Image (tube, rainbow, N blue to C red; front, side, top):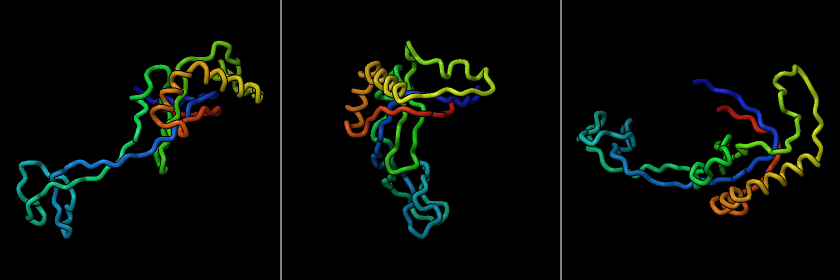
Length: 162
């Protein structure tokens, strides 16, 4: 099984996703002077191997996405890109099917060594309108899960590895 780089040009759904903090109870050394501070130990360990103190339960803080796009969307949209190195994570989703009257600008482009295709504002507006209608149910699910202000339909170039 290998990896492949994909390039998508067209409408996409962008969802801004925040992070939720949660805690997990972990058995660990809680001695602040120990090199194993907050390092998990097994249940049957009675003493820290470094400082000799008994391990205690520690509330380990962690963070995860407030919304999992995999729980919101089924097969109509694919989660292809997630930007997580920022305060609010961004989920980018593209359609799993092509528009029936899709322009031929990228079809068979891999067979050509070079080429040029003009993209007009009308192309962008038409494809964005089509996406909004064809995926209205998914857009509504996204707005319900992420919040109205955190969902938008965009148009552009998306590269992703799958």
